[in-house]
Length: 491
Image 1 (cartoon, rainbow, N blue to C red):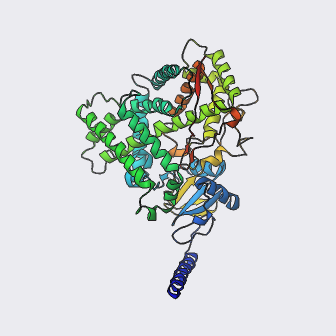
Image 2: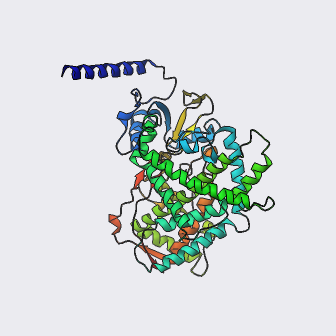
């Protein structure tokens, strides 16, 4: 008994000594925030509802700019439209490096267009933007590709004959095939076993990343990485996807025609060959692999999640779906497919899609940034390499820009005359230098898929609208749409 008491007292004294030592360490000129405990950081301030809920509670106390210790590392949080714009737009270069996502870091490290920083990132982004533009507007434009996928989807939905179904897989297929045509140079059949496996792996990894255990790993990766858990599952998933990408790269290499590149992979391989004598080139195998991985993930899940949220909202608010269909009937009719030129003539539909993106809030915490140099911001000094999270959800729900921030209301994007209006707080793809590469493609997908489906089908739910729950299934780095059943009834 005495030995147990002695051990407890020793542990308590050790903890108190660590606590005292942490108080004496200089904290620089970072924004205010809750005082961290040794090793565990701000664990005691973390809400069981997840990181976003925790940050929202801390914002109430510390304001729009504050510091949170995710485990031992300090991270500056930016909340609200003004703070995010001041950093990512007004001081875009200073905030342009990429922070760490602990769950992905062992695989991606600092490679690939999404996860790179500095000159590597600038080189890869320039190349990726130019290449995606070339293959998005090549022999078959992105618009035509999206229209073709929409036509195939309509055929599949007709086969359901109005029976309830979960749309997750179908929405994944159509969005994945757009990015696959650009990156891999081919589309996949919905019954292709390899394709189905890849879609399942992507869905699993996104759900795991935003799960409670995934969020805890971001806090305490330095400790938890030595134990089994979510990070091991994600590591295994990413390795399997990379094996597929590597196999595809080798097939491309074996059939490559330098004078006739077919897709992103071909173009990268050609650039690798041109720069093979340059020891400092960024065009090497590792950057190719992680860039393809990043584009495949982002191109598949972002639009797919938004469509799933969008049609769930149409079930919840059927009067909105009816108004969209009325506009479709007036502008497009029923005898031709929607085109991108129709968008400017359909302000209500465009406003509904904007509001779906706002409410879906795909990336509520935003991808982490790092400052490229010692940076002065709102009276604080952020030392070089300080990590920064732009909490995009706080802009998308900013009461200074949205009259009813917690309600679904397309009028947020319509002026008094019914025309579409811009809103500075609308940043579902982030803003600034690191805005999502595929923003343009995603916007085109959402308009064409959304209007084509509602042109051909009315939607219904086995549940009453008032009983439909639109809260995300998981909310972390991304919001994962809940599972639901929907009926597509031919018009």
